[in-house]
Length: 331
Ligand SMILES: NC(=O)c1ccc[n+]([C@@H]2O[C@H](COP(=O)([O-])OP(=O)(O)OC[C@H]3O[C@@H](n4cnc5c(N)ncnc54)[C@H](OP(=O)(O)O)[C@@H]3O)[C@@H](O)[C@H]2O)c1
Image 1 (cartoon, rainbow, N blue to C red):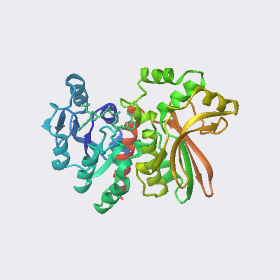
Image 2 (image 1 turned 180 degrees about the vertical axis):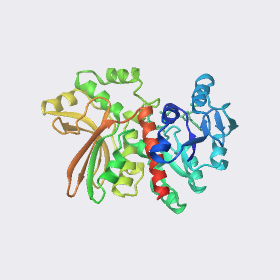
Image 3 (image 1 turned 30 degrees about the vertical axis):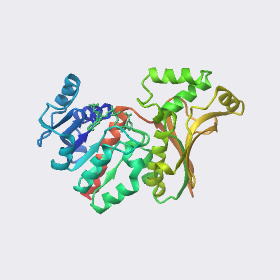
Image 4 (image 1 turned 90 degrees about the vertical axis):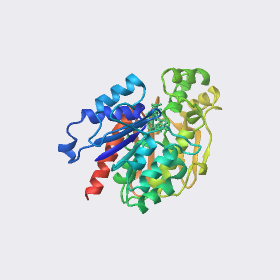
């Protein structure tokens, strides 16, 4: 399987490391994953025989870019011209116009390339059209790392609950805001809790993505399309972030046996908002954990809990998607 990896940050580098460490992929899954191209904001590198993964990581560390390892290439042109089976899209999530991921994904799909995206921007803004484009071109679009990182939330709902009718779901889908709210439960003021989260590297460079609920809304949109079959985009989500949550709100909820959580919910309409969640509800997880409860017609409510982000966790979701594509294509 020939793969182009666009975006060589925390997730991209973890994927290179993961692939280099897994010499069992061929024997276990009957495919060799060959990285024929890699790109970052400084340029790109390609090699039809497959780039040396260790050299790629070393070059990035030493020069700040993958360019210079293998044959130099422009990342955009690589997606347009290089022979490959799958594009892995791992550039930053942008909720204004989805770029550069939007163009990358559309170019790949139109060329007949499968796509694995961990980039949430293009999916939050245009998932119904991208699914249609993939179907029209006879290729697969997978994105299991966009919700829950390495925790297979999308696969659980789609495959483990196959045949069920999921009627609604509620989730804590952003670990950063959950960490801040958990700190506030321990008595920390919002500003101090935010500073603590920042010092641990939990907060996005653009903090609005976490605090104003954009990241949670993007994940909610992806879930609603994939799990509920809705055709929605991010503007369909009613969204309130956590900036106005006070210590008084948190204390009042605690007196009622609850904790304030940023909950993304889908029960006909889509909403992200800070609401009290009973401490006895399995959804009520602390720290950076993610959790989601699916309610279905005959199986009741089931909750899945796990770490929602992290470079290596998300890289493992990419590997899962690549193997899923391999299995689907092999029939
Ligand atoms: N980290 C996680 O835990 C996690 C979990 C789930 C989903 N995601 C999503 O996965 C994606 C990647 O996350 P990350 O943590 O790896 O982000 P990151 O560390 O910021 O890496 C982003 C990469 O994209 C590259 N890039 C930026 N603009 C580009 C362009 N125009 N062309 C080619 N490459 C470009 C950057 O280049 P430089 O290296 O030169 O800056 C960098 O290598 C994001 O969309 C994120 O939302 C991340």
